[in-house]
Image 1 (cartoon, one colour):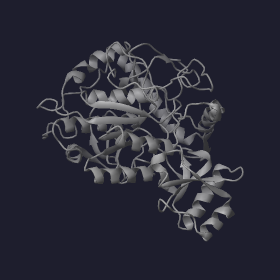
Image 2 (cartoon, one colour; image 1 turned 120 degrees about the vertical axis):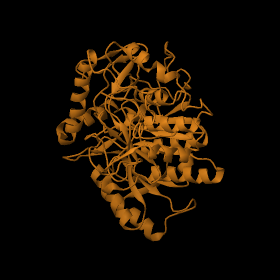
Image 3 (cartoon, rainbow, N blue to C red; image 1 turned 90 degrees about the vertical axis):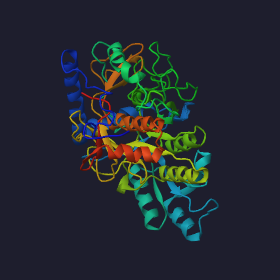
Length: 473
């Protein structure tokens, strides 16, 4: 991808023209502006956040009785300003110092004093690295966080078992585009046909998203129909409240389908897949995400993994299971001589605190820009961010269904072959994943592709290298 003064900051100059600014698009722009203002304001509205989280908790009260292994119960540590810290109730995670490690007398005494029993995690790949610590009695989120801090002060690598969500939770729902999906499908047709680079498509990169899954429908317009549809990667769309749903799209329904469409627009020839680790309300345990990440690389052959999920943590401590998964992937790279790039959304927290897994060293962390290429104020940012691209008012593939009036007063209806508009770093990250896949097709090794892409960006303090790829509104 040669670049010069014509495409610095816009590496695929001319391939993704701006959206129209007149007519019905202007009305949609007003909706997007309202939604991102609400997202930015939400960090200052604890009553609104807590009421919504409690609603989501009630919707999964039967989580222990459902057969879907992705669904997990959650609780939260409330905060007044910012976003509440979500965690799995009744467990901590402990990094295992060695595969055959057993606690010595002092450690066993410390665990007994804290009322913690040792158990295995529900992931074969992680069992030699991570242990669960289960309280012997009822324990509040605050007590769990305090116990983890005590363990760390005694030299043990422990953390709460985080919820790695599509969030923060309660972000604005998607909106339908003017003229329906056909308008966007036609607008995107040229980008969909074009190969990456001047030399035509080369070997496609294997790109796997860890997300809510994909729609089970085959689309008449052909979008995403070549993404595998397996029994364990279909987004149920209307799973909550358990056990049968309520006839409306769940709060994160279609998230994975939207993410896949972002990648496909930028890299139309990528070998695209999705592993389901997140439920359709946007909730995922870090153990599940970590396990699917390892599986995507080792079994799925992923060269690029997109993680449009993230979490903040008490005391900004790196989540144990996600840290272990990244270590396993790194070891696998060294053993096999293959390269893997992990691309992760920086989060929609509106502050500079680390969001995991994006903040881990070696992860390509992606913040969001406004369509004018300024840092989006609702996006997480900071020195740990690698790069950024437009994350406001992004168009992509969506699912069939009606939005829940509790989330979207307009109860927007999406028909077959739907496209939608959504905002978030969730939809900035897959553009970068797609851009890397596109450069790989042009013959760049993966890490060289990353350096080439970053060199084409414009530095923006706290937002890394700014890159314009898909337009927003």
